[in-house]
Length: 218
Image (cartoon, rainbow, N blue to C red; front, side, top):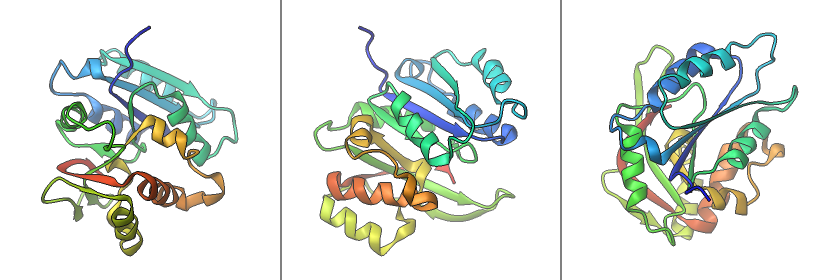
């Protein structure tokens, strides 16, 4: 049996080839030894007649030396079900769901993998890295960062989230894949609040380790 990768970066996408190209490029590690620890999953909701996503992924695969999976979903799948497909298809011990309009900073994948290599698998089910919030022009609007590494127990994490809904930015969230599955995935009925709903359930059960490393742009 093959050893599972440490990290799956799962990218749900829909008809945004230019943004997806930026997103995929940002996942390339700088350290060549990192690639063996990373799996890339692209889960595509785009209509076949309108999408250049598959062609983009094929081109990208020529420069990607790690595991890569591409799936085109059935018409009408919807965004939330696509997020769940990302988790279902992940083979990594941890999963980062990276939306196609977000991207990682240089060296981010290397930093995430190093952090996971030193993680306490009994406690560190949910990790939250720092995120830069930018507008469409690339202007920095906010930094959601942590000065020190700290673990918040479930009660404290739950209260922190409910008192500050912007505490969690999705591209900073790296979760034990089995923890995602154990709480039942993203709830379709939550619609556009499914990310927040997911964070509430994760934090309430597992707490969160806040990591003093900024890895992504939202």
